[in-house]
Length: 439
Image 1 (tube, rainbow, N blue to C red):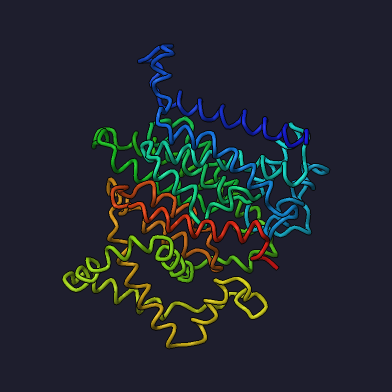
Image 2 (image 1 turned 45 degrees about the vertical axis):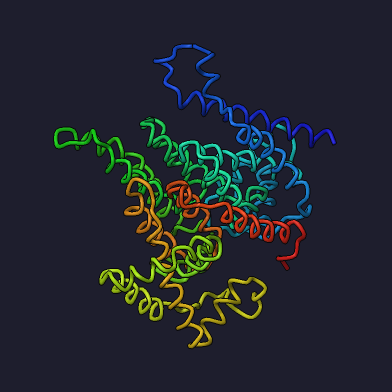
């Protein structure tokens, strides 16, 4: 019991340190000096917020405790890697094949050495401490909107990964920290955060580009006289990250970290993930799409541009979609997404029907308002990121879905939307905790 208590205390210290650091980060110290009363007023007084602050750490630790005490799917790579670093901190094992740079595993290993705990439960808790940073900065970026923050935590495709030893939520955290620093003008920190994000997942460079471009475009201080200075200020993190990624790719011989894994992650454009993203968006936000269904039909019928876009996307989907990844086989049909893709690929009538429906709801997604013209930058970058992945993997959608929630107009959300999302979150989470979804 003592190691678990120690890990919980360690996690709590990290959590409260980050929490209060974020509060200080928001406040202009030069203006308030050391007026503690003013600082205290910045602490959320809403009872629901305070309840979540107390509950979420307990939920994370309890959720990890309820998980099977064996590594699940990709944890079978990450957990042995952490243990390997314990014996050989400056080597990488040939037996472990990974597509991502093992930065997350190495950071977790270093922290496990500090607390002298390396069992699976402890390693998961240490990883969760980084994942929770995503919730803090989602709250700050959404202008302290508790509804959006709660939905990001409860997203069916993301919620289970807060408890698992995966890179996806820490990668989300790094992207949100980068975006927040850009928003607050902390440009000294942004190059470092951009590099850290690449150590977690290589494709985070797309999100670095997104927020560099977005915050540059909405900065009212940019003019002809200072445009060069402002370009350097906003795009220096992207330049440094690009140099790092290019150097790494040349030395490594490819973007994928392990040579054997690169055949499953080739460079190219694939529409499979874009289509599955639309499908999951439809499932997760079904009540929202149903409410706007009539409006979307009218927009397609009355707007020549949207009708043309609908037709182009439908035809492109039919022509480009192949569903030919090696994992889409009878041997791996236990994954629902694989089974669905195989069915669509093998039956032409189902393909036409499915792609017609998805093309309509692609228009529906575009019609959902995002704040501050974020949609003009968000959707093209999302298409580029999803199109770069051959294998359909819902984990790739955690960052896009989270950013969608942060920048969407919260007024269009209703109570039933929360109930609907909570249902799917419970369905997914209970299946994972019961070890029902994995062979």
